[in-house]
Picture (tube, rainbow, N blue to C red):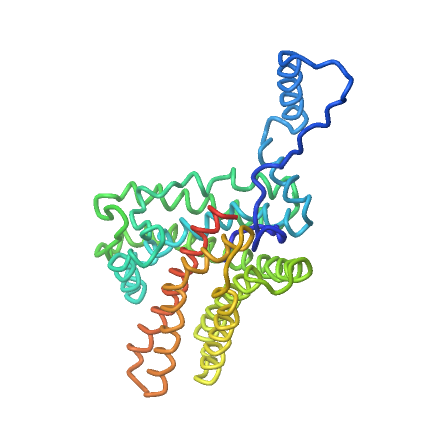
Length: 358
């Protein structure tokens, strides 16, 4: 899921980092004020502002206020952004690591694949669980959401996730001699499996619940973001970039649901792949135009996701072709995991650059 809050006039979700101030109007005939009183007044104003904001989370309050100047959707997206950062950047390697515990061979293969293809991810797929910055998934990520929506169901889900992750990490570190770093081999001792597996499963369920809730809340925000972009700027390069990322996400979600429920058909897969290709092609004319200062960040972001996006689309085509040729189920399973990993790769490149530009 992408993390950028809505800031339609400046790009697909540009976050305002600071207000732009006009120079003060100086009276032609009035006396000049010395710098010292201005400095004292400025310091007093800053301290007064932070006092009003409160000692607990002044920065979170200020960021919400800035986002809310644009729209309610902007504020809601800003409140969810820290949770999405946690899920996108840090939760994936934890999930894959804990999935590999025990005899879950398919996920063990997926994690091996992640280790062997870390270069496909913008952050080199942080695969060492011991070096992941757990502080990014701690209670402070709820500051904004508590301020904006203190009764939001997401808060309870996130609290359960934080606790389950903490307990799983404690158990893993206590058993670190058998689970060094990121790789967690299958455990031979049934007693050890019986002791550790419930805690790991509790974390995995909490992670799945939080991800599902975030996805449900976030897709509505992306659609609202699209509406605002089209209303203010038309279907420009920012709109098409966002449209492609929404379609990419809907595609992988449709496939995942179809595989989980065993309802996916080759026809549905072909249609989803075609829709994604059309979203990519629709933005091509705008990517080929000369860019200005406003469109440059979106243009550069397009360039950063080009390789992973094309890999994602190719993975979808490969899955469909192999399905049509009736290859072995094991091969189809590998193709499906390749699609999911390709989407994760695309998302990692998008989010890494979006955090810089927006």
